[in-house]
Image 1 (cartoon, protein in one colour):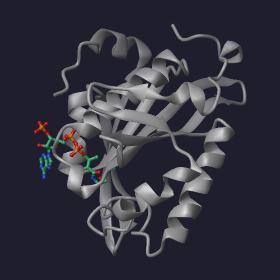
Image 2 (image 1 turned 90 degrees about the vertical axis):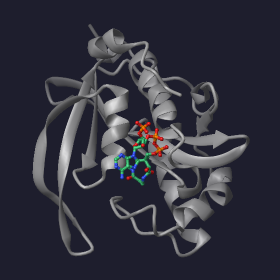
Image 3 (image 1 turned 60 degrees about the vertical axis):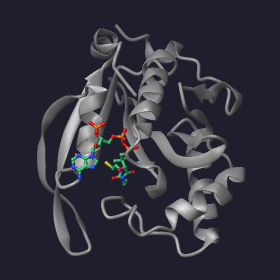
Length: 203
Ligand SMILES: CC(C)(COP(=O)(O)OP(=O)(O)OC[C@H]1O[C@@H](n2cnc3c(N)ncnc32)[C@H](O)[C@@H]1OP(=O)(O)O)[C@@H](O)C(=O)NCCC(=O)NCCS
C-alpha cells in the first residue's frame, strides 16, 4: 500500500537526488549540464521517436534544461543526468507526476529516457532506469509508474521488457512525426509489483 499523498515529503533538490548504480552516476539535472548534453542532443539519430527535434544550437539545449529544471523545482518532473566515467551519456526522467485529480488519488508518474548514440547498447538505459524506478517507488512513494514506447522502436521495447513493466495495450496512431503515424505501446508497474520483481538483472 502506498503512503498517503498528503504525508509525502519530497527530498531536497538537488542534493537528495544523487543516485549511484554499479557503473553510473545520476544527478539532478542542473544548468551546468548543458555543455555535456549538447553533443548528444544535437545528433539527429537520437530523436526519430522523441517529442523534440535535434538541437541546432546550444541555446536550445540551455532552454530545454531550464524548462526541465523548473519542472523539477516545482515537483512536476524529476530529471537525472546520467554519467559514466564523469561523462554525461543521457537523461532519465519521471515526468507528468500526478498526485491527485479532484477527489481521486493518482500518485503516478511516467518514466522517460534516452541514451546518447555513442553509449547505446551497453545496458546503460536499463541500469539507470532501474535506479530511477526504485527512487520513484521508494523515495517519492509513487503508487504507479507508466512507460510508453513507439511500436516501431524495438530498443525501447526491449529496455521496458528488461525492467519488468506489465503490458497494458497498444494505442493506435498515438502521434505523428515526420509525416508518419506511430502506435504507442503502454506499460505500467505498481509499487507492489516492483517489490515482487526486485532482483532484476542488469549487466
Ligand atoms: C531506447 C534506448 C534508451 C535504449 O538505450 P540503451 O542504453 O541502448 O539500452 P540497453 O542497452 O539497456 O537495452 C537495449 C536493449 O535493446 C536491444 N535492442 C537495441 N536495438 C534493437 C533493435 N533494433 N531491435 C531489437 N532490440 C534492440 C539491445 O540488444 C538491448 O537488449 P539486450 O540487453 O537484451 O541485448 C536508446 O536506444 C535511445 O536512447 N534511443 C533513442 C531515444 C528513445 O527512443 N528513447 C525512448 C523513447 S520511448
